[in-house]
Image 1: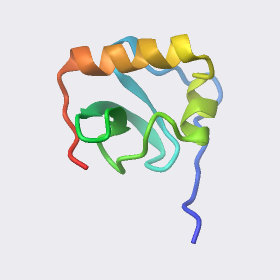
Image 2: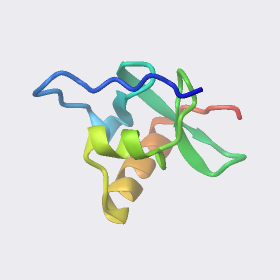
Image 3: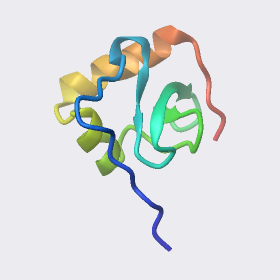
Image 4: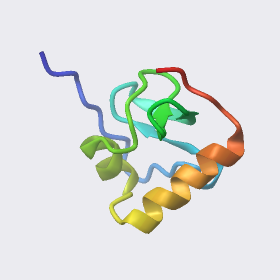
Length: 83
């Protein structure tokens, strides 16, 4: 079974510097939190990872430097996500 993927409206802009981004599975802008077990940033709603293809596509986070900057913002926010 494949989950439904939703694109943001045209012109959508997430606040990546605060660890907020478009979640293609929750269909909204949500804060992401740090998962210390899996060592990655994940959606606080559905728990999708920043390594997800659709997350990267809709938030325009393709390069390692942009992903690392987003992960740093998530860690700085202090939000935690349990596996």
